[in-house]
Image (cartoon, rainbow, N blue to C red; front, top):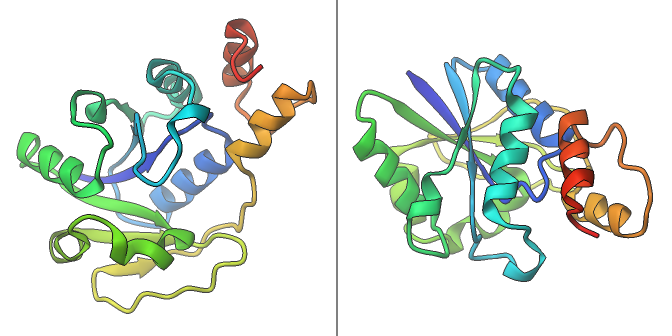
Length: 188
């Protein structure tokens, strides 16, 4: 199978993530999309993250009705912070029958060359890039393909801040994710 890997903190997962994943799935030859929940991104501060198991559970709730989406906790068992190349290598070794493709927002292209072993990623994996508002960065490489997708400016930071301030996040999150956040009092 050809698997699209959508890495993220998903703190929390929101409709923007789901729209992008569905668009890339629909407009390519992918068989599945795996949401790889990152316990600690080397470029983000740890303090604003809720527990990794809560973030994984929110992903599971968000995608439970999508048969071609899957939550992936592979990085929970890997050294932290997690580096994309290490996860790609591990998944390729564990699932040699699959072909893995990396999803990347165009905003990540600006510092992609700072990623650990980015050249190896480009040699061994296809990279599907989706547009982000305000990012006109292009990356000329035969393995990098830009996919037309909606420009979405929905941020988990905005959602967390809204929850902290007591504002509604209806329509920004899948309903089951919103219910989970309220029940567990996350981001308050």
